[in-house]
Length: 511
Ligand code: SF4
Image (tube, rainbow, N blue to C red; front, side, top):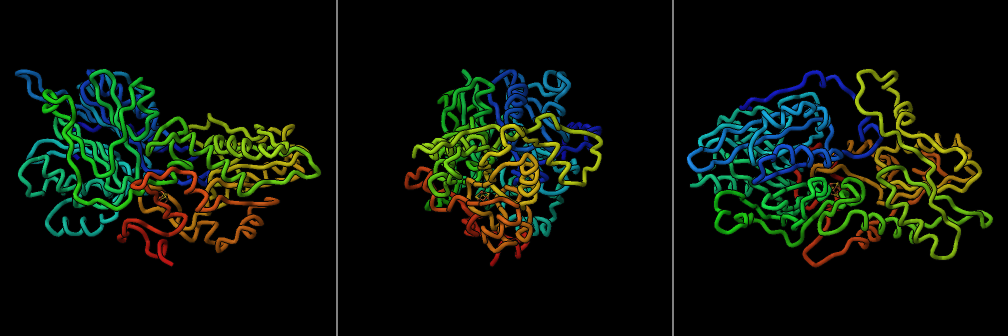
């Protein structure tokens, strides 16, 4: 990669308890774009901070000062390093003196492989015949392997092992006439899931794949345009939400806006009959204070909790109250919905805080006994024993992946002596990995696969008195449909809306 990339090797050895280690899927990435603000990189920094949940391994920003009268646009400036946003940009001079300019893009990263591989940290940047090009990507392309092979045969040298770099090479090698057409050409060639922000010199480009797998929205802050993975990033900048970028829409923010005030809109060639938004963004991944796919995440999560209470209520023993507790924080909202609906029939169902999550784990250089998952779970969670002892307890969780953490968590809760311990999951059993940018373990590691989707058997494995998942129909029924809108349910059904190339192991995906 070209550019004045700076890295912070001090962070390379750091460790944190990842979502993977507490048995949740990981998404790879959150993205931000800012156009037309003298503090573009500072706004991008704040946006990335709000999107920290979408990627905690590395962060980066690329900025540019647009041309002004006789002054040409500056060259792109880049700073990226492993670590949390506040760690990477801990020196104020990085934002104020290095990343100067009024246009910027930023990226938070989770990797699927090689977290300490500095070359894979985004945004990526290249010099080519049209100037400089930088890209930040959320999602996962599905035809990378064949495109990469073809490009390599033609002499392309890849600098990274990521799918995103393919977009840069396709743009550089396109025979279309203008730089804009070359970018469209590249985007019309790749398949799979991509929400993108790019800088082509001083032009900001925002694009979303035709299926709309990952969210991407537009905001305004006065004259400034903001692009963000989730609306929570607009809130921190006090920007106003304008709309979602439509699936298949590509927007160019450049000098042409001086006349129209609006970005130039182009559309990708392929138009699916229905969109395929990732339903897992609602279940677990996006923040509850965000609006994605035209819906408030909080509202949908409450509905999932209500639907779960309708489908899998817990009967009170001897008319004693039922104490409902969330696995914090991602299941808090679903637990509220569960209690609201469960209490409607007059039964004594109460929301209680019986599990406490330690938010101060952060990165450490030494984690004694870090190989032991049990230690990790105890570092992350503890019980409020007075709340649990002798009670009928219902634990609400959003998903079970491997089941290892569920088992340890249930052991932990049992130590507090509940009378009964029931588990309710606000999504269906996960039976397949995700090829579109969510990092699940392999198929054989998924607990639902290991137990052939036998819920009773899974219940015994995790040690609960009862276990129920939300059904697929009920899950889909909680999300409004407007004809065109649709949802990907691949990890719950094996029904993948975009064909998969061999960027995933075949045995993970096929029956
Ligand atoms: S397979 Fe699952 S996680 Fe992946 S995009 Fe589809 S619904 Fe989302």
